[in-house]
Length: 383
Image (cartoon, rainbow, N blue to C red; front, side, top):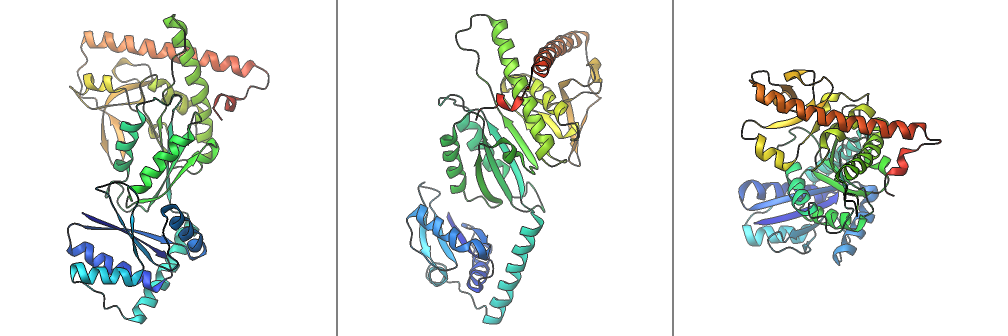
């Protein structure tokens, strides 16, 4: 498969002509794919300089075209400028462009105006992902992130929406690992991906976010042989961190932000803390994905998501709990056509009691912090 990247100044006539030629090639050749990068004229020189420096290329004009070696890995192979691309299309595919100069200039002007409009309206949506990389051997990073990120930018997943910016927030000081993930993501040349950034400033990471995905999982207390002490320690960490995350969402994210919480432990508690500390965001916008082991058991009956209950199936209202749901129009609703036997009801009540206990422990810990002089939950987040 031939995958090319075409980048150029938004108001460049030759970028406009190369773009049209690339579209023709993609329409007529099933194995030809093009990824376009339209750069604002004010930042073009810096962008081109940085791109060439990072790939050890020499190129000084707009546009620039390179080929992604997606089957082999490694950096892309520079093709050159417009003339090189035109010659390549003629020599390999027998296709050329007959766009006249007047049309080139007209399209280039429209491209420039569109780019300005996009920047003014700030139409780039933000996806913020947080990871806990406390230990370098944390193996969940590779299977989760490398599988999840391409799926987030699957063509057609967000019909009618513009490009997206992906913000990776490092929760525990492993910036080097996230920088590696950033580079791998950029190498994918995903069609809807505008940019990837790595943040250590938590407020900046959540700024104007449209979608937030939490993949945090805290580590057990080292050297502890007491299961209760270990669990209380974990709940304490979760309470402090997600209390702060909720406040950051409230202060910085969009009010229509959608939040997904995933992980291996205390997922419902994390989601509950976020909801409580981001009161201006609709609770229906928060969804907790329960653990893989739980899914393996429960998906035998139905696909389930953790949502905030309203008293269904005898579960206390307001408790984040796994419920069978259906989706319509971008919203979920709890299904009511489920039969709850006495045996199942006992198990549901036992789960609810455990979740209430976790929530009570977290509330007690947070209350103790509130009573402490100059309590600042931001201190609980690693810097």
